[in-house]
Image 1: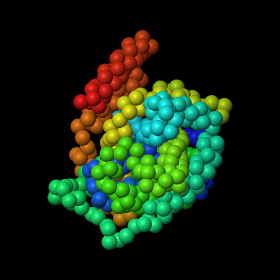
Image 2: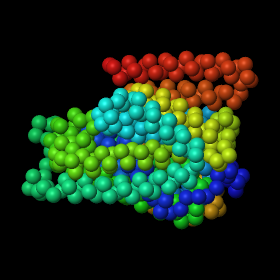
Image 3: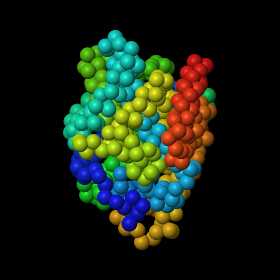
Length: 456
């Protein structure tokens, strides 16, 4: 038995194909379509290499998740594994908290992406569209996970078809003789190492993959489905992002791509109505899918933290639809707060910093559990051991060091907020009211600082 050994209130309803479509279509979302231009600024023509290396790292991380999730298949994912390895501690709670914020940031990118791309079509403010999207997410999740899964399957199938159509359309006029790998006026470092500096930004594209372990208790045939879906989805996302980024940097002028806030609209300009239909269908379906999928995992993570006593009990309230309605509503509120910045790069860095911190803790947890609990059933093993967890630790530290200062400032703010939430467990009602007032003031200050960072 592990710490969360009591039966889950959430029933297994998700099978292999449903999970695979959810993982692929849910991962390739707002991060890719919104940050592609900024990624091109950093990596140049080597942007596909950034995605290839990021995909390799993500695959190794998926092996760690697969071992931990199959040995401890409970709702909540990383929080379960860390508690089993190290118990409870304020510092570990902050890691759990930042991981949850990172997952919410991933979902926020999808909502922002829908707002960015729909705004010129509907002639409506992008933030207003984003807020409407968040409201729809909350409503759909309150209806029930089965309906979200059905929507994901349909979206996933259509999305794969539109992506294939875009790639075929762009490659029709492609010539290997015109292939470019370096910028004429760029520095040696950008032409040769720009792909490395681009990874801490674009890695958010792969973040949705591990979300399925947060809903492990709702997965059928866990020992078989979790490792297969984690591995295959990462390979699929890597192939799609490498191909799409290659097509974009070789089809459109790099300067035009790097300066475009909506990179996929370039297909409409170059290939007419067909390119426009395929591009917008791809972007909107991918963002919608990752928003649904990410939000589903976000709420289950909060639910698990609440069940473990780390978050207030309001997060673990189950509705008559068998969904954690408290977590759904509160997650929607925090995603709204993140989206108010309207800065896709800042939200992406927040997500990535939280994820890399989690990768370090989970890698150490895997090593600790192998020694501490050698007889724990492990249907899947991360091999070669211990090279996989050690490599993930080292590369995560490198990516954290490459993250900008403003990302660390935002993460520091959320860490302080998380510590206040942790302290609420020890307060009486009167003190809790004062603490909530302090949190409200703190959020206001962080919001003002975030706006100043964006303006400056």
